[in-house]
Image 1: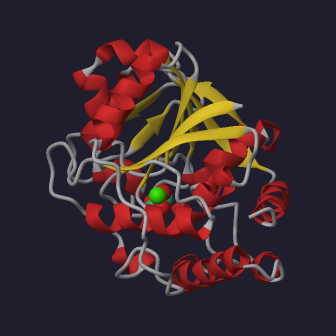
Image 2: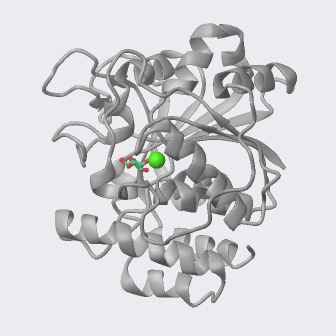
Amino acid sequence: RRKIIIDTDPGQDDAVAILLALASPELEVLGLTCVAGNVALELTAKNARVVCELAGRPDVAVFAGAEAPLSRPLKTAEHVHGRTGLDGIALPEPAMALRDRHAVDFLIETLRAEPPGAVTLCTLGPLTNIALALTRAPDIAPRIAEIVMMGGAYFEVGNITPAAEFNIHVDPEAAATVFRAGVPKVVMPLDVTHKVLTTRPRVEAFRALGTPVGHAVASWTDFFERFDMAKYGSAGAPLHDPCVIAYLLAPGLFSGRHVNVEIEVDSPLTLGMSVADWWRVTDRAPNAMFMGDVDAEGVFALLTERLARL
Ligand code: BDR
Ligand code: CA
């Protein structure tokens, strides 16, 4: 079983990613570390627990981390995710408590306690917690198996500004730190996630599971869809974050290139842009496996089959 820590800012698509991980026997979820992003930290830390309880897993360790980016005010995305961050269905207040350790301490202590290469970090939100951990404890970098991240864009350019993807844009300094750390990385950019669309038949397949989880996922994706279909004119909403977990379970569904990725931290116009050297026109050393294509039918088949187990 592969040990993972999910760093997250739920978020409906984060919630689906967490459910996919908890439904998969190949993965051992050591903990969820929450970060401010789609909504404020208080809500992401609550939403993570709502999702664990929905999955029947109140035993999962959930930690609260950074409440703001490293050096900028927090920018949230209620226009996409709603006021609660999990709009679409009303779920019970969580009874399970947050663990009393800070998420960054949990990350550092776990990576030091586990054998080198044993723990994979799955990042679904702004990279503040991960950057704080790497800066405070540089010794953890070589112990991380890999970072599998939802963030960035190349041909698809941006969603929160014309040039930048939300997770990177919200804390570009944190993203720059993570991209510079010598840790193997797999990146799921908008180029991939904008192909993983919640079309009508796919949402109906979730609903047809006939379970509380299936109902919640259908309701969340319905909500999400309203925004994205209007914005992009697409057949459904992109299910960004589950791509990270799907990659761990079925890497063959994705293809990409090992390239150099740098993060813009200065320009007001392109702040948080992920500059991927897709065509290898520089001699900058490759630092990430940047995905470009996906078998979306395969992702939805996997997701639906796994959600049925919860
Ligand atoms: C990313 O931003 C958030 O709104 C989603 O949860 C996803 O992680 C997509 O740009
Ligand atoms: Ca997210």
